[in-house]
Length: 300
Image 1 (cartoon, rainbow, N blue to C red):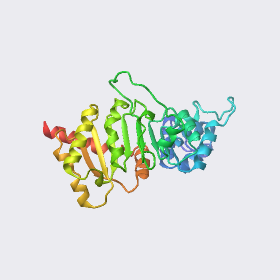
Image 2: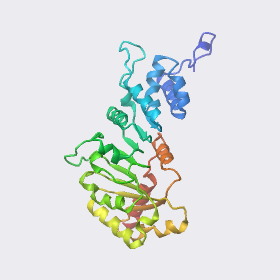
Image 3: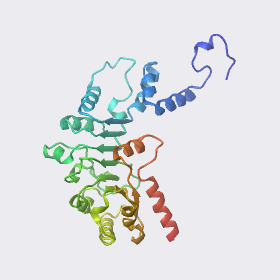
Image 4: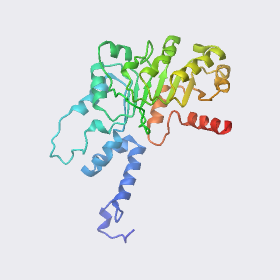
């Protein structure tokens, strides 16, 4: 760093390369949303750098949140303003969680505008969403690509309480996480291969009572894998808190290919999604993928 002088005392980063300054600001913005908001007020350059980080993960918990965020996406601005962003605000959203129950029409507009979302978590009723002819963004897969972008769908809370409308899910979905509360909804997963041809990762958050015996669980997962040939990892998150329930469900040892990994579910599915959607926190399937790879190495 250059010699400190009286004139340089007014500069926050004297003699630092612009790339290093941005690294510092990015680190500060990722560390705290409050800091991100403050940085957007420093200058137009800082705002352009920080807004994509600020909006990379968006969580909407209430109807008020939904309305406010839609207003932010829809607000017009002057294109000759120095505060204008290089891309629309909606295109910065990579992780979107909507745990509010509505308004469903507003939710559809938000999802359709945020077309770059890689991880979408739904807490609203998908059955109600489908019943009034609302759509989720869809993509048709003609052939399985050699390299596929990760597209996650997390169906939590009320989203699939009664059923899973697979027609709402895009065919390019690679990772599906569903919170299942009934045997009927669980068995409906045997039909998902018709809509999700490139699904590679599945996570099921379920109580142990849905498939009460080792035999029934083993049959279910073998059928699931037969119908979904591209699945490489199935993560089963047991919501029961007792050790006996977890041990009874550890059917992975009886599976010939070892793709099924049993873990105890976290106390909150919502908090778990938030933790795994923040940059640097890893993936919901990270530990399960590592376990499956370990089994493959040991078997070979």
